[in-house]
Image 1 (tube, helix red, strand yellow):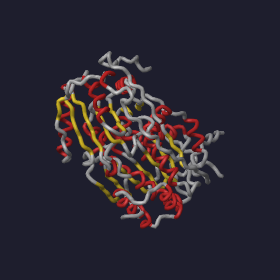
Image 2 (image 1 turned 180 degrees about the horizontal axis):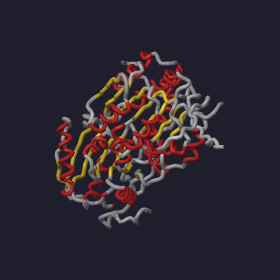
Image 3 (image 1 turned 120 degrees about the vertical axis):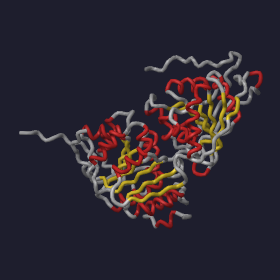
Image 4 (image 1 turned 45 degrees about the vertical axis):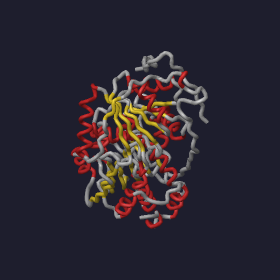
Length: 455
């Protein structure tokens, strides 16, 4: 498949794809879209960054246009992923504005979401926890869902959403089409798929799941906890392009970001303890090139969809081996190349052995350990004062698209369903100085109704 036009897509969809520059389908899109058009349930297995969002959004929009009395539901593990799908949807529906969507995620007030529900959306994009909140409040009913998508179902299980998913599958219509996308496949994912999928099920796989992408060059440094900070600065100075740094906890994420900032690095951070507004701002700045370095916890790993991340640095190893693959999958996406560097201490050896075991089991390349030299923080005397520590990136233009309106069918349904510590992560060498740097009609689909008074 060399061109989306070979799918004979509806005119508003094809026009939108042309407008956003989507000309050639990725392998997962080329394999999935024809299957979804048949009405069969689908299991889509592919590594991250392969175009899964387009693979289900394009046929889903076709379904909604052809079935005006049906709606769609997308379940995702993280707020960031929900917002990224929403952004893609706005671009895809720019020539069929009546197909509205609403995004239901935690971290923000329910009130604007309730107002969005009353604007007659055809699509709901939601995290499982917030969706169940709306179901329990009677603000939403799923009886008209004709197509259901679970994106990154494996990650939803990893994050403990199994109870919410079980509640959701109980209330969605049995007569529906279900699309089940996952980056990895194990026994838990298989059991979940059997609860959601029914009838004819087709399976589409691109590449090998649970395997590190072969477009990522991995490296490993043996170091100490104290040595990580200076080693991180050395790595930033030796690399070009955007860099995603992973730390183990929210507190360590804050400390790493503050440490880098003290050396003039333009950096932001993202983790579950930050507000939705802060997380959205950090991602936007990273996407637009206003910052070069983003520090994150694993909770954000699956929600970061930035096509041009050049490097991933594991400041801390993940607690679960599979998360190593999810992390480094943020670079080397869709055929691009990238690097992934991990810092390993003597305390990490058990974790690293589990990662190596997984890499060998899946046939992935196992990086060879290098002994980190005794690094030190850059001294102002060693540098050209005119040269910034981190080279600035050019900001990229952003794009926004409108939406519109129709009769609602999501009538209400009853369903039984610390402040940050002071910075202690000081630069290890007092002689080092921060380096300055500059950068350029109808009833609402999801409306809530008051229960009828009993006589």
